[in-house]
Amino acid sequence: MLPQLVKKVVANNPKKLANLIDLVNLPSTLRDFVGQSQISRLGCFTRVWSYIKANNLQDSNNKNVVNCDEKLKRILLGRSQVELAELPALIKLHFPKEPK
Image (tube, rainbow, N blue to C red; front, side, top):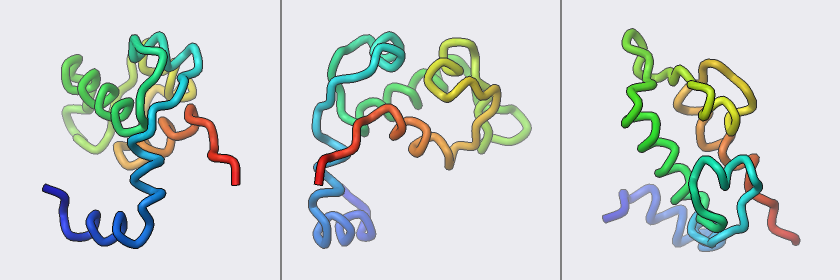
């Protein structure tokens, strides 16, 4: 079940949902991390989040911060710490823009 706000955004602009769920060919750095040659942006974010949780990379004092290990640094522009709110934007950089 989608939250009301998400339903409203999707209803008003179905292209936003399509951008999240369309399969895309991944660049090599992201392909090595995910282990697939094609994945959606949403699927990629889910994989990254699962990796963060499985490897206990959230900061113990501030759960809104992720302490990146070497594998995660490769896809997050070499940053050692990332705010959770920045994750979607950093992952989005790896996905090609739609031609207009």
